[in-house]
Image (cartoon, rainbow, N blue to C red; front, side):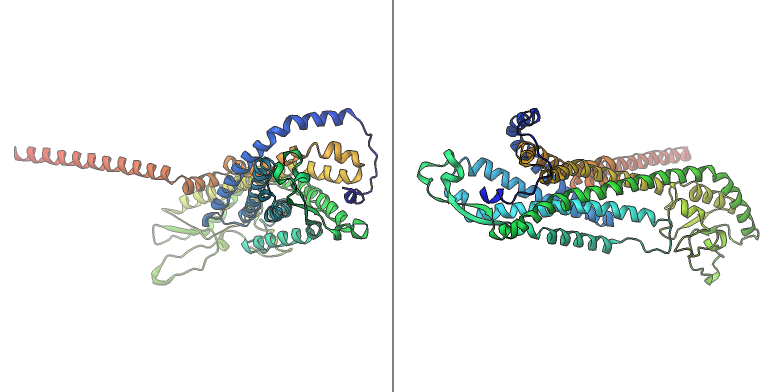
Length: 492
C-alpha cells in the first residue's frame, strides 16, 4: 500500500476529512452490498443469454447489415465481460473466501483474476467505442441517402471499423497490461480470520503492482489511470453526446421534409399527369402497359411492347455538386432507389394513378414514405441504445476523472462507496440492448421467433394446413352432393 500511495495523482482540490455525504454514501453501500452479489450473478446470467440471442439473430443472412454487424460485435464484447464477471463473482464470493484453502488461491486462479481485469476493461471499452462507431455510421448513412454518386457504407466498412476499434483499445490499454504482476503471500494475510487454521501459512497467489509501473515517478501507473478514466470513459461519452444531437437534428429534418412533401403532393401529381399524358399520347398495341420506375435496358426483341424508362418520365439524374441530385426532388426528400421494379397494369390511366399513389404518396415502395418511417424507427432504436450507454457510462467517466483531480478523501469516501452501484449500471447496460431490440424492432422479433420458437411457427402452419384440408374436404363433399342431385334430377 505504501508503494501505491507514492503513485497517487496530484490533487487539485482538497476535500474535507469528514462530511455528512460520506456517512450517507457509506449507509447506502452497507445496505446494497449484500444484495449486489446475488443481483450481479442474476444479471450476468440473463445478460449472457440475451446477448447470445442477439448474436444468433443479428448474424442471420437476412439481418446482415453494417449497423447490425456493429451491434453483433457489441454483443460479443458484452458476452465476454459478463461471463468473466460471473466466474469471478461466483468463485471469489462463494468459494475462495468461504473455503480459504490453497487450491482456491492457486497460480492459475491468479492468472484468471488478472485476465479478468484486462478482459473486462478491453472488451467493455471496445463496446463503448463501438457504440460511438454505431452512431457515426448511422449519421453518415443518413447524410448520404440523397447522394446517388457517393459510395454507401457496406459490410466491409463495418468489419474494418470493428477491427480498428479493438486494435485501438488494445493499444491504449498497454500501460494497464504492464501494471500488474503475480505476488505470493500467506493465506493468513489473504483471508485473515477466514483462513483454515492448518493452511494459514500456505502460499496464496494474488495480483500485485509491477515494478515497471512504479519506475520514473509511477509514469506507467499514472498513464493507466488517466487512459482508463478519460479515453475509455469520458471522451467517448462526449462524442456520443455530439452524435446524439446530430442524429436528433436529422430526425427533425426528415420529419420536416416529409411534411413539405405531403403539402406539395397535389402540385407534383398535377405536373406528373400533364407530363405522362404526353408520354402515352400514342396508342399501345397491347392491352398491358409496362412502366419501369428505375433505369433498365430496353429489349424490343420478339415483338415485345415498347417500354418507358425513368429517364423519359423524370429528369435524368446528373451527378453534379459533389453527387447531389438537384433535379430529382422526390429522391432528395425521401430515399434513393434500391432496385429495379416494374408495375404492370391494365391501362395507362391506372398505371399513372398507381405510380402517383405508390411513388409520391409513399405506400409500400422502396423509395416511399414506408421507408422513411422505417428509417425513423431504426434511428430511434439506435438513439435509445446510445442514450443507455450515455446514462450508464458518463457517470463512471466523470467520477473516474474526478478521483484523479480531488484529494484521497474522494476516492476512499465517494468512489469506493459507489463502486457497486457503478458496476450495476454496467451490467444493466449489457442487458438493455436485448430489451430495446425486442420492444422497438418488429424484424428482430420475427427473426427471434423464427430461430428460437420454431414450434410456434410449426403449430401455426399445421393449424393452417388442417383448416385448409378440412375446407377442401368440405368443398369436395359439397360438390359431390351437388353432382349426385344433378344426376338424380336428370334421371327423373
